Amino acid sequence: MKKLTSRIDKERLVLGLAAPLLALVAAIVVTALVILATGKNPGPAFHDMTTYGFASDSQVYVLNKATTYYLSGIAVAIGFRMNLFNIGVDGQYRLAAFFAAVLGGALTAPGWIAVPLIIICAMATGALWAGIAGVLKVTRGVSEVISTIMLNAIATAIIGYLLQPGKLGELQQGGTLVSTKPLPSSSYFFNIDTGPAGVLYGFIFIAVLVGLAYWFVLGRTRFGFDLRTVGQSDTAASASGVGVKKMVATSMIISGAVAGLVGMPTLLNESHQYDNSFPVGIGFTGIAIALLGRNNPVGIALGALLWGYLERTTNHLEMQGYDKEILGVIQGVIVLCVVIAYEVVNRYGLKRQQQRVGAELAAQAAAATKNQEVA
Image (tube, rainbow, N blue to C red; front, side, top):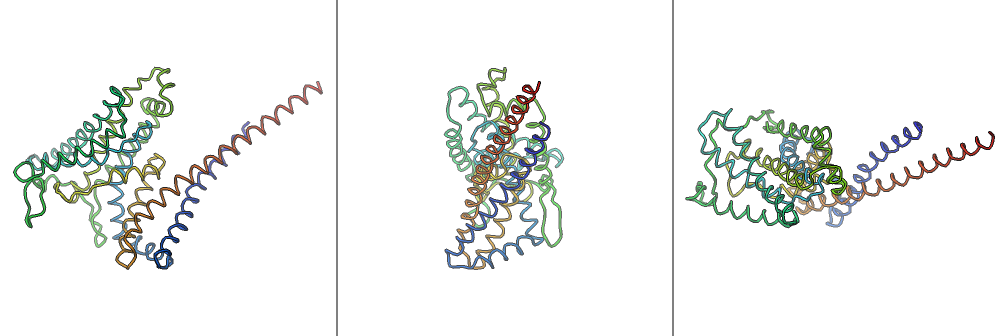
């Protein structure tokens, strides 16, 4: 039996490496075909992406983007582990960033007090907004997909209304940019000056802590075990004494709290205010990154880095004369290839494991029968 287990573990390792490699090869082939279809040569495009993407300034850019994308991916993955589809991360982080910016602009406290308060405000706002969807699901059976989509629209309307000049917004120079009151310099989060390569967001360390907390809570605590159990089978979880409704609401609240952090790198490290140019759509990017990372904290980190790398290099390709739609095509192709590759490899691995276990059990049964005949 030990020999069988060792053999299966080796196969699982090989299959685990085969899935991303298969997805990578498929993505490269399909992307090359797409570039060829536009009348361009994919060879120089890939070479340019490689050389430009690994330049020092590009590395800093990718890390900064990946910080935001990683937080979004973790927020989505928390819901995925509960078999919940939290599409509302986009509205949650924007509403959280808006109210955090309003609070930060009004604070006169020292930075070591103001910055934690701003972060807590963002997390509380995101948790509250996501909690609405959680409560609706457990009390009225409303699908979280529908409720979070509607909450995204409501969040957009609330921000648009409150950001008007004379309410919580103020008109900046130029006549088109409306923003909250800028944060005082004491409330800025620290940056790391890398010299000519640019400035690295200090919030990357918060993202790392969030990833570690996600790994520990879900993989090393009773709460995480209960959460994963409910995600796999709410009936079995309920039979074992787990409060399913409580877990659903709690996971949505935690997902929203993490979503509240998504806009913090931009607010605290870059813009220092919320305005009508604040980035949107990061919540939907988090869905793709969580899928790429298979809800694993390390996988999500790799997916976030890949997304930042693609954004950096394909934007550069546009400047070189390639069609700007290539980025969307590449991203979509990669997500599809990863999902399909993992599914194919998983099915093959399960079939192989069943065959080996069946063969081993048949051999053991034959040996036992032979021993009985000899005896």
